[in-house]
Image (cartoon, rainbow, N blue to C red; front, side):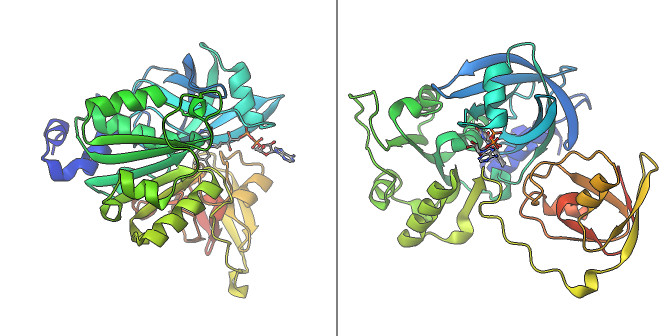
Length: 374
Ligand SMILES: Cc1cc2nc3c(=O)[nH]c(=O)nc-3n(C[C@H](O)[C@H](O)[C@H](O)COP(=O)(O)OP(=O)(O)OC[C@H]3O[C@@H](n4cnc5c(N)ncnc54)[C@H](O)[C@@H]3O)c2cc1C
């Protein structure tokens, strides 16, 4: 099916169309997934008092291929040190020439403050990716419930923008929780989008009114009562949730109490470590010394089977892009050209990538000699 047929495909393929929109061909010139790029900032937008969107274009102006919900790993040079963090792409793949990230200033945080204080139009940033499996195509649905809190709005915003740009008219209930009304990220745009898309319904719930004494929305936290009022058919909906760890565990408990099927619940955590499964003890059989050859640099090193490939590569002086070290972010995704590895990831790689031979070095250990595409 060519890209024109795909765009005009019939309604049941809604989520495939989002994925297709992310992979449409543009004269064969795309930023291939998994590669590093230098992005140039072209606009900075104040979303709230402590949240800013940074819009970038690629250095060569090429369009970027990604799925809504995916993230970039950015590398900032802070006081001479290269520091990496993940940020969801808040813009939609349907507008592939500009990429936005929307960043909340975290008190004491290294990269969020660096971005807020230093990133201006004309500034540059190294980025890897896009990565991540928190995408609508991973769980196709015609009725969705988006639940977000704070900066967790970003992946759901990308999904919403993309759906509307494609004219999908999807049935979405989008409930966003914020501390106060002035903390609601994308407040005006979400309300504007909802006005134009009758099947997108947007609701806000704020813990307190803050400076906005005339706030007439509900205050407090999301409850089963509010949920049933806004999405009476929530049991039939595919749920996508993103927000702080405490918010997501409260949402999960709420949905469990209401009888929602956990298999239809999908979440993205911004807290690396939260929700990550502890690694099982390594069996004694995982001992042994293996040789790892790198196809691009012709380097090689030996390593113990109990070590991760990332840690052994770094010890051997090999420069590898990495961030979370827990199989979440996907930054260290690398193709294994020869040999076998034992990988225990936490969602940072898709089955179809594994089938193509890709592995995450941070959570893979060798079970034979290897050749890596590095
Ligand atoms: C997949 C993914 C997507 C994400 N998307 C977004 C997004 O769209 N928008 C967004 O805003 N964020 C997002 N994040 C979170 C983001 O990656 C960063 O974690 C966040 O911006 C904080 O980074 P930082 O460098 O500013 O803070 P850090 O330097 O990592 O610090 C975090 C906290 O730890 C404290 N701290 C730091 N050093 C110490 C120390 N030595 N001792 C004690 N405390 C310390 C800081 O005070 C701060 O409170 C995402 C994360 C992931 C994993």
